[in-house]
Amino acid sequence: MSPARAPALALLALAAGPALAQATDEQRAALVAAIEAAGCVVTSANAAAIRTAAGLDAPTAESIITGMGAEGLTRRTEAGLRVTSPGCPG
Image (cartoon, rainbow, N blue to C red; front, side, top):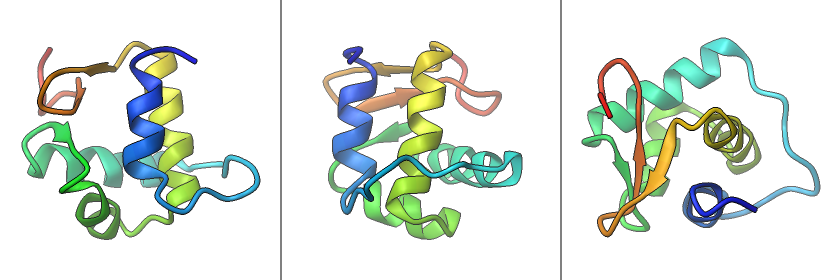
């Protein structure tokens, strides 16, 4: 597991299901918007609020973050998991 992906799984998949859910483009956009609104960093303190704001369950959020990590759009920082997106430039 990549270093960028492991924190996301711990932070967003608070109640992981048996398998990763398939996420839609709309769900991904909702999660990215919620992360952008939270300052572009996912932490243990804000992960549940981000998921709630995006209207996602843990397996779906996990699937999205896993995909973003595979695309190089997440990285671990001291603050938490930093997401790169149009609203959160590198």
